[in-house]
Length: 206
Image (cartoon, rainbow, N blue to C red; front, side):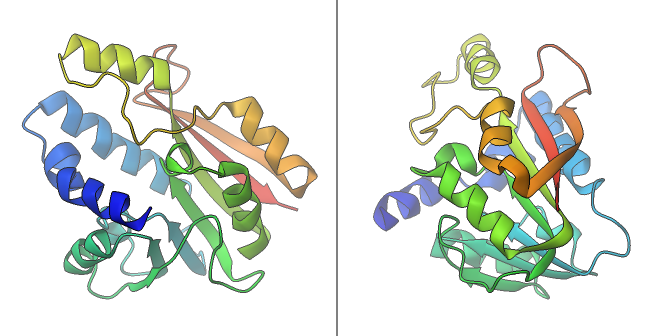
């Protein structure tokens, strides 16, 4: 599994493929996803975890805060270090977080769950390390709209091989159960837009 993750990291550097894409629409959508997710972080928040930090484009904007970035890919963590020199970076699995209970006040989990064999386990472990009244900001793609978009732009394959799951809002609510309450919902690129590419949901732990 680790080898596959590193192969994907080499093949798809997030900077080139997303945030510095030559396609202005692709670049705009991904930058808007960051902006929309980060707006839910309180200015006075304590410890933040970026669960699945990838190449570090989220934590690069959070360096003035106490932030930890976690990823399973060594290659991506090395890229993240270049963007976020002050952040703490940890190699680890989102499905088995290497942190104690109640460690973080806010957790970002942006476009990670669809890549995991056991996303329910990842969500439950995320809630384990989140402090009471802490916020989990979870972003997931609308798989069907992404496929249509890739088709229209002639980007192959239409379905990405590393997207193992399709995560619905109902699925998330079922997994979270009584452990947390959904308090905010937004979309990318626009709130309440029927063809949104991503859904951002904010859960507060009870």
